[in-house]
Amino acid sequence: MCGILGQACSQGAINLHTFEQMRDTLAHRGPDDAGLWCSEDKRIALGHRRLSFLDLSDAGHQPMANEDGAIWIVLNGEVYNYLELREMLVAQGHRFRSRSDTEVLIHGYEEWGLTGLLGRINGMYAFALWDGKKGELLLARDHFGIKPLYYGWVGGQFYFASELKAILKGLASRPALRLASVSDYLAYRYVPGPYTIWEGLYKLPAANYLRLSQREGFGAAQPACYWQLEPASHKTSPGEAAVRVGELLKNSVSEHLRSDVPVGHFLSGGYDSSALAVYSTALGQRPNAFSIGFEGWARSEHQYAETVANHLGIPLYTTIVGAEQLELMDTLAYHYDEPIADISIIPTYMVSQLARRHNKAVLSGEGADEIFGGYTWQREIAHFGRWRARAAQALQKLSGGPANYFVERYAEAMAMGRFRSDNLPSMLHPRMQAGIPAFSEWFYASHYRPGEWPLKAFQYLDVKAFMGELVLTKIDRASMAHGLEVRVPFLDRTLVEYLFQLHPSVYFRFGQTKSLLWENIRHSLPAAILNRPKQGFVGPDSYYMNLEWYREHLHNGYLIQDEVISREGLDSLFREKSHWRLWKLIVLEKWWNRWMR
Image (cartoon, rainbow, N blue to C red; front, side, top):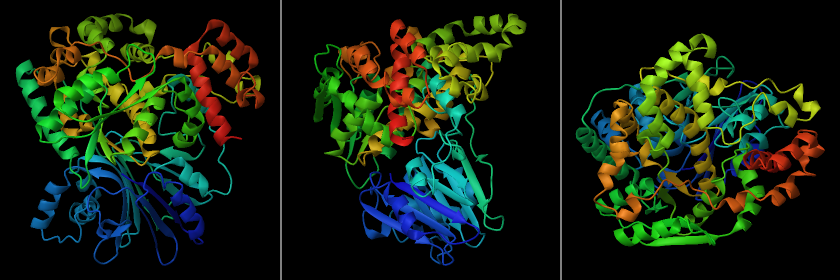
């Protein structure tokens, strides 16, 4: 995992001193090495900060070129099936100078072209490739958006980078704040793509690529989708499905362990992280495991992690924290670039810091809840799915149709103190009200995929919206702040595709959430782990529901001083003890202080 960036212009020349400064804002993502390539006419530049895992020698240095220097590439992430692809390419006559997955992408592009390459690779990646013969700059992002990629056109030049801060470093002035993104943040807890918090800068969507032509001056181009998750409801016996899931998950863990340095584990003691530890040890590994505990909290997850680690015979490193963790909010505002109101960003940041002292890479359980049916409300939707579909049809004229009905239900499940059209205006300062558009569920609606079973539509929304925009952003920034690579085996493309083809009844056998995962680990873990209730990765409420701490930071804060929110609206939240909405404002306050002052 690394940091990448690039710049292209049709006139003038790129300032390489400034470009190096842009690159080095990503030093935390790649502390092992730094590279830069620029075309002779200084119209194209690619930059890279390296965190090395495969081929630790100089042969893995990036930017990397093909034999004649016509193709250059920078890669952030990992291609997990690179060994299999390499064998195919060698059989076609390609010769390799390194053992890296980056070189596999170069030869794969030469052999199959961009879309042919993207159809074959499996991994987490964001890469940019310059084809000098065609005069094309190509950007691509992995199937689920595990690795970030931002881009935009400013002042007649095209920029891209792994983090927004790298682009901002190269601009003469800060872009305008996108007011609609402020509204979206207050509704969704994050800024949904393809937009960012800044006007003119965008997120490349997951499973998309961007093709820019030098002949057209690297002008505006639209992302193109190269892969689509297709939900279905095929009848398969629970036993057959469980066996196949076990095979696919074992293969995924095996591929995610490919590295020239040891790979550890985040371990919470829940199903997801424990399952990955089970498969790793079954594959002959004895990985370090990392957990975080909360001082004075009976439900602290580190005690369950200890149970799993002792059972599997693997070393566990734990850090115990208290309410002082809230002071990290200023630091996190820098690393996240945009406001993101997920309370678990703090413990995720801290456990990443712990893990980096011992390992450069870890496996983590993100994605399991979304693809296996780990949420109680998913089980309820599956159970009542047919009835709800009929009810929605009957209420079509009143509710705006089944799509609107289910989008609203999903929005309710994801609420977490969201602001909506009925309460957002009163929260904003009058100066801001005129500029912020009326709120709508546009992002959820844009990803709604109607079908026979509402559960499938909800799962699709989970993968495309909640997981893709919130969960994966959180884990990337929190870990890469410390130069730690987090790998997510549950988001193996083949595994996800298989699960999305299954009938909903298979997901919740005997009323058990994640029953397909449970079937594969129930003989490998203690009953105390298998029978424990689901718990989010957060600390005690007392850490985050401290109204006095909120008041201290918000009452005379920058959002008030800069006339973003109204004092009357803020006071009403304190009277109502609306902790989740106040948390959103705290995150926005810290971000505003870091990036707008």
